Every structure is written in structure tokens, then in C-alpha cells.
Image 1 (cartoon, rainbow, N blue to C red):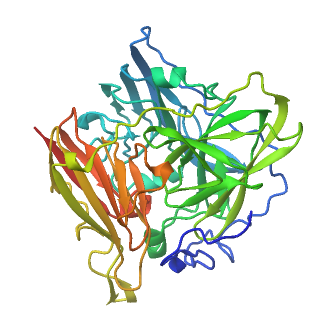
Image 2 (image 1 turned 90 degrees about the vertical axis):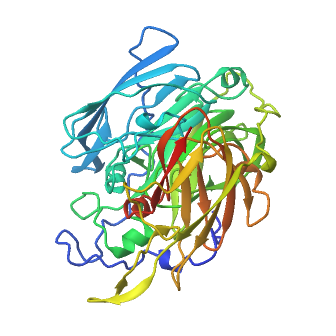
Length: 494
């Protein structure tokens, strides 16, 4: 893959080369395990199993989830302590249908508090799974609600106050898929694990004893904990055998804070068919896509031109400039049936600007610099939204139930420090209305719940607030920023 500038503006501070982690007894000269591997692309890609529905009715689903400690051999003979859902690392895929009644028992078998947040799901506030719904160690959380949204690729992860980054890094994440009549009837790949493949992409760094190097300093809080190894579904450099036809990839940037450009080594074109909240109106042809932490995209790639036995590499470029050959697809058989993508996937209910009742403005600011007792360091409020850090006792915004609002979000850095941010809203899906006054690119014109905002950018989003009242979160989805307090609370009131 040719080198290119991934994203411009104020990114020099993101370089991790030479990062200093002295003072930690586990570190060697460089701090991390050498990234060279001799056994790459020999292990099969793990496919997260579908979580068993224990219910006996088609209109109701019932599940059990155990949050537990585990262990993984990312390096042969060197176990790494991990966390997982119903397993050692990551979690099973939850698949439900629009209109179903959803029940789940979440058993916290950890020694610390956690939560389980349904990222992207339209859900009553009491079952949102954010920091206001903690699950203490040794207890069970029993949410019950009805699925009320279109087919989409969502995900779940912990969201405990101050612990989100660490718990996600250790392995707590999984897919949450919604299907409906539209997804049933679309002529697209839909055989889960065969030609409909979930891919959670994450980077990690390791101490020399093979444990996750989640040991933050101020650099990590500002830039995020960025890794020098790439995992796909929890595996390093896996491979997957596929047929020589259309294959659907459900891409999730499940990293803590990395921004990825994802494409293929041979620059082949793929079709983007869905964003965070579901199908686009029509497929969008691209040969790479940028996803910030927490964003998803469904893409369909055609392997019909690949000779039997040949391989195609999926590439990931980290914003700091590292390139990874993430995984390889081996074409080992012909497609059983020919699939041609429809020209229209789903009519999009576009929210007009004239419908908005309110315009709210948010400024995401990186930091203020000052000199402390140890020399130049952090002073003041640093990572803030509208100059404020998260406070459970403060409701930052009140939104009227049934209203439509435009949120104008500006990424404004202080002095010399300008960092990317993202904005994630709980409960609602929104539409990106504009970027710096211009229409968003075609692949960003669907339903979304997380949006990347680069230094100096102003992004306008528009959303309808329906069905539920209560308190929800909005925050930067770079998890180290979130844990440091770059988060606020909005209350939907009747």
C-alpha cells in the first residue's frame, strides 16, 4: 500500500516512536515486545459465535452474559491476562430483530465494577449501560427492553466511570446485530461467518512479559493508548478462506483511541453499504475508509477476479503512520450463487434542517498548558467539552422529548496542542448535516452515532429525540479522553 498522508493538521504529537515509559519495572530497553513475527497468517480468523437465544418465542429473546477473567496466548507459550464475555477475550455476537423483546442477565464475575453499554442502541435510559448503571462485582444486571430500530451493526462494551479504556483494552467488546424485513429481503451476503464476516479491529502493545501494556502517562491520556500490534477478532495476522464472489465485512474500529484507514493491498474497490446506524440509501464505491474509535461500516468486496488459491490482504493504516497487513483472504472455492448488489438499499428518512427546534453548540478542547511543580505539565481543565469535565451531579443539556435538534461541534485545540476528537451520543442515531459548512461525503450520509472531528473542524449533526426520557451521555469516544472526563450528560424531558 502506497504511503499517503492519512489525516492532516496538528498530528505530530500523535507519534509514539520513542515514547518513554521508564520507571515501570517490566520494561526493557524499548519497553515493548518486538513486533516481528515469523508465524503470521497461519492461524484462522476467529469468528465470534452467535450468543444462544434461550427464549422460546420469536417475538422475545433471552440471553445470559458472563463478564469474566481469562487468558490468551498472543505469543506462543506466554499467556496474557485478559477479560472476556462468556470466554477469554472479546464476546459472542448478539443477534436480534427489530420489534423483539430483549432480555439479558449480565453476571459480573470480575473483582471490580463494570457496566455493559449498548453502543448505538435506542434504549430506555435505565438500561443504557453507561456509567449511571454500574454493575458491582459479584452482582447481576437484568435489562429488559424492546428493540426499536432498523437493521444495523452495533456493538457492546463496558462504560464504567474511569475504567472504560482499561476494560476494553483487556478484551471486553462484542458485536450487537439487528435484523429486520429490509435486511432479510436485500440481495446481499448474509450467511454469518461464511460471506457475512464481523471484523473487530484493535491495536495493542505488550510488556516484555507478554501482558498488556496499559500503563498510562500523560502522553497516553492525551493521545490515547496506541498499540504496535494489530488484532482482528482477537487474533494477530489471521487468514480466512472465502469464495470467489461478494463478501460482506462488518468493520468495527474497536480500538481505544486509534483512527484507522482500512483498505486492500491491491487497492481494489469495495462498496460501502452501511454506516453506524444501518444501511445507506445506495452503495458507495471506495478503495479505503477512515473509521475512528467506535465507528462501524459494512462493506462488500468482490473476489470474483481472484484466482483459486490466491490471497488478498486487508491493510490498516494507523493515524500515527504505522501500516499493518491486518489479515489475508484466501479464495478457495467458487461462489455458489451470483449476487449483484441492489442500486437502492433502503430509502433514507432525511431530516430537514427546517425541522430542528434547537441548535446547540459544543466546543471540544484538548488542553491548557501551564507549569506545575514538576515543570511543564497539565494545569487547568485540559480535556473538556464547553470548558467542563464530567460531573455526575450536573445535567449539561436538557432536551425536549419529541424535538429535533442540531448539534454543532467544534474541535478547538489550545495553544500548540490540537488532537482529533469524536462525538458519540447515547440513545439516538443522528445524520451528519455538514462538515465545515459543506455536505458530508456520501458514506457519511446515513445514520450514525459516532463522528470524527479533526482539529479545527466544525461538524453539524441533526437528530430526533423520541420514545424515551431520562439521562444519557455524550462524549469523546477516544476512551482515554472519555475516562479523563471529556463527557457530559443530556436529559430528555417530557
